[in-house]
Length: 178
Image (cartoon, rainbow, N blue to C red; front, top):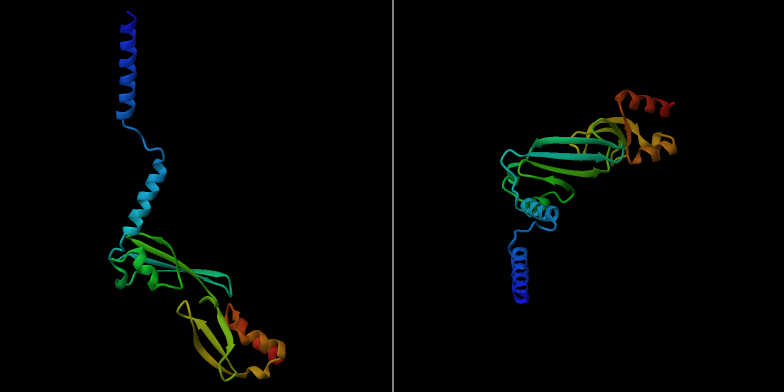
């Protein structure tokens, strides 16, 4: 009688061990597994034809932020994140998917909303505008030499002085000349 109970106990134990080994288990870290798979998928993602390019400029001289949204250049079509990054060394890529590429950068200029008063190489005051997002373009050359301004104003305009409107710029100049 005792050996029967022993056999039943051993059989139950054997069934329990077999069930534990063969029973399908959930992953201990499904979220971590999903993130790893997602990261691997992102690395393999390629930019589709017609994808959008979002470039976010933060202008350090005026603290304005401008986002430019355009169709990505055809040279980017079919590229992975790893292949696209070297093409934009001054940018930080913040999002990459087959349909969109987002990037940002800080630019040490005034944004396109400003008129910038700054001397040219010859020392003549000029008005510049940021027409391209990352460079100033000459709008007009004035007939005022930097040397005609008070010393403090000369220093102020050396790196460029930004104005919201042309009227504000002209008013500042009139005030300096009087």
